[in-house]
Length: 239
Image (cartoon, rainbow, N blue to C red; front, side, top):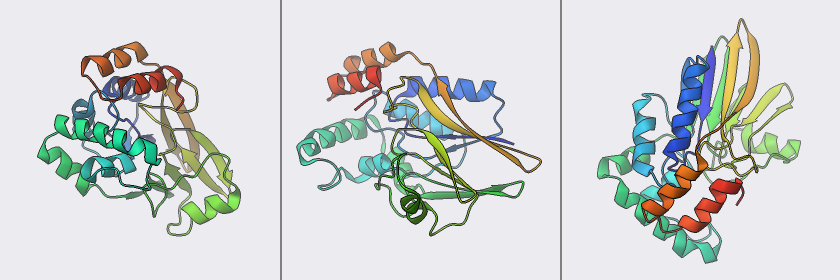
């Protein structure tokens, strides 16, 4: 069984195209989506349509929540709040009411079992769409953030746009990074793979090339309200 976990597309449908092509080439059996589908990219509608066309389980991310109800004080630096809500308004204008309803209705956690292996997945933590758990978090933070509410062998999350895999007390912790906006300095889309065969378990991160300059051009073609900054993030994979 080969399972792909994708997340943090952020309206970058070009990167999503490349990832879905790679997933097909890898012979993946199942795809799950861990949120942040539309916000901050030049193709929010096409990104969402691609995700919905997968006919698979999708959970909500913080950016999906922002599309639904706006960015609120305390969730981002105060100096960024107005601009981020301007971006959010642009995104909403590209979607229709059924898209907003779809994002609003998404669950916040996924629990699956394959060949006796329990996998739990969430966007940021099991209890928050916004909490940040970084790759260098100490063991106690990992345990308290991820392992208090759900017993599993594999914990999969996204949100921080910095993929990694680590092992703790016989458990696998995997951050799958970001399809559309990686922040780790590597300008390649990222997604996670979990492979289970005869009880054996393998986890890995895939990094996929896509046309960065096409995405940058789209930000400007569609008059995205924060095109210059977002273009820099695309070109550097840093924020």
